[in-house]
Image (tube, helix red, strand yellow):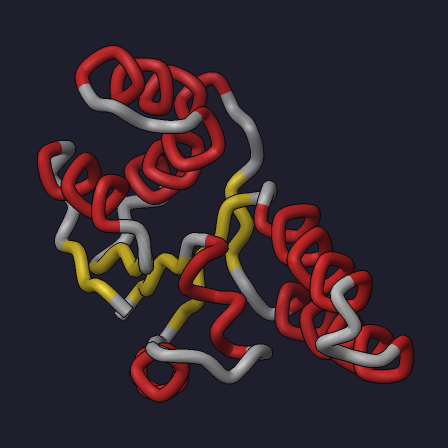
Length: 137
């Protein structure tokens, strides 16, 4: 099963919060983890914010970043291709979405995933309307 994780979902793989158990279960079920190329800066940004807020140490930051980089090596990554951008723009025009959320949906559509995971209800609604099977985490 090709499982797409947006940033709000995939970050739960590294930071324990509500939804972490579900994300880990989806990771175990996936035959392929599918991500948008924008996920790396988005999750690194979240790690940096946690470090600034002193919720994680610099050592923990480096460990989390290393784990993320290793995981991304084995994932299918969607580039910002014309197809991804066309899907993203179409979803922005028909839904109330932030640009990055639309890129995640466009990436999932372009890579023809089996399920789209997010913690963002507005994004899940838009993804569902775009024809994706969605699961909240």
